[in-house]
Length: 432
Image 1 (spheres, rainbow, N blue to C red):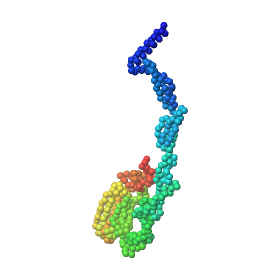
Image 2: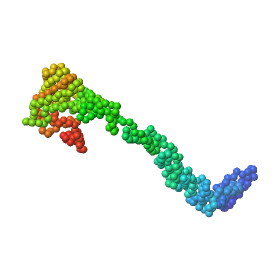
Image 3: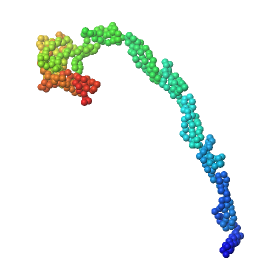
């Protein structure tokens, strides 16, 4: 019974469909999902068949071939590379693209004689090489001879040289001065390569200078090189200038030849003596030379009272330089005493050095007959404090400690620095 019903339904549907197709120009197909008649491979296309669910009409469609499966093996030519399929179709080319070059590796460096070679490598392993240009020559220091200078390439096996060029000379330096006896030498140096050449400076004339004559109050004009006396000059007496105070003395210099006339030096007591060694009364008499250039200098360093008695005919000027600290510092007070003397009548000047540090006494006269000067002293006896040194940053000394405000110093001198930074005399070290 069931079979009969099903068959009847099918006949009805077929009849209805036939009637519909007969009544219309074209069936509106309703295709099923299709059936694979032939599977596609990478070597051959496949076939799919579809059937209309209304009229039963069928159609076929080609199933495209899929891509060949790629291996990891590259093949290449000069311009591109590709992957080889892992299937049997090895003649096919997959993922074709132009070479991708790296930054390159130097196979051989270029020199000034030969080109270099650089190798480039693609990701596929293919390589190419390209030449690089020759480099410039690598020249060394200047080489020179008396004709000029040049440079040589230092690259091994090259030896290329630059064009030789002439030296560029400087103005020259006198390396050996010419004298009246010998020729001199002037040396010229090339400002480019430092090559030198020499020229002779012909010996010149005598170099005359005024020089003092030992043991005589005169000077002579002689050549300072060979000692020859100037035939056109006449010897003359010294012409001394004014007394000039030096750090620890006085001096007068001849204005013609530079001969120095040292001062008379007088000191009543040397520092450090005590007891019976102290001479509490000292007398010294000096007769000055004549004329306005005459002069006597006493340098007094010992505290005391000094009396200067002059005997002369003419004017005597006494200049007293009192020093408050020390002579090197140049701090002083000057007192000038000028007196017209009558022959046979003495004149006395008293200097109190008890409350001062030291004094320079300068005596000048215009007496035509000369002046006699007697210096007498009644001194203060110093009591120096043994071997103990006093000092400041630059000097050291032994200080009088007798009291009464005496500031006398003994053994006053500059520090003598040792390798350890301390004074070798007094032991003072500014760094400790």
